Length: 334
Image (cartoon, rainbow, N blue to C red; front, side, top):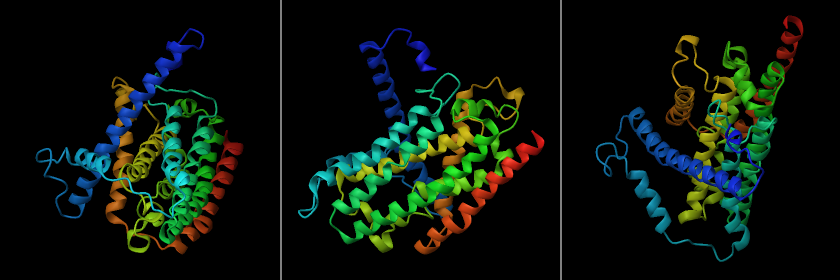
């Protein structure tokens, strides 16, 4: 753990080291966001039989996203006259900050984790739930009916899907007896939880798509109904903050799925243990990210009433049944 490197009492040196590591992680995440957007465009292009970006940065369009970011940073920052200016400015920050904070508890390998706290899973769920405030505030502060509808949809959707999301991981907690993410990984040495908790994995993955506001659950920002939803009045770098939030959460959620259900840095077979754990984590993480992109390319958007019914009438009962089944099996056989 990084904390093991810091043997002295807390002071300016500790602060400096942690601050530097946080900056490095932020740069890594920004690099991921830049090329995840490019990868998503390419995946969508190939799956839909068309070209993705190919104009800037050679054949692969490697500089297209970089050019898009520069364009956003140079665009005029427009704040509507009738908007609630302080909240309008604050909303993107409230949305983004929790997305970066949750990365502190993700164990990327057995030796690289920023904060190995005993309730890392609880911390992730609690902090990530704060993002909805930024979305609702952004919609309300814009003083735009489409933005307000998008904000309300975001609040209803994220709160509703957080319940099956949390309930699905209770089966894993019952098996491990821990909320520590490193302990959850180590408990998977003899089998990943995607095998022992397949129902929990399916519920968690579906709910995570809704939490990320990704297709087919991107109702808060549906262009054909709400012309971009809660951030319709945002432009330039403030709009980029909302987009950054979504992709940082995709990074965080893919990492969390890798840790909870795919064994984290552990190899699938013991004979493959000579390959570094960071490589296994990156491969599993990349697979989850690709599936998110794949679903966006293939599935149509849900209707809002069916979206909410699916959370309360399907995922919630299934997650509840999985908890009961897991408790029963553990009581009878362990």
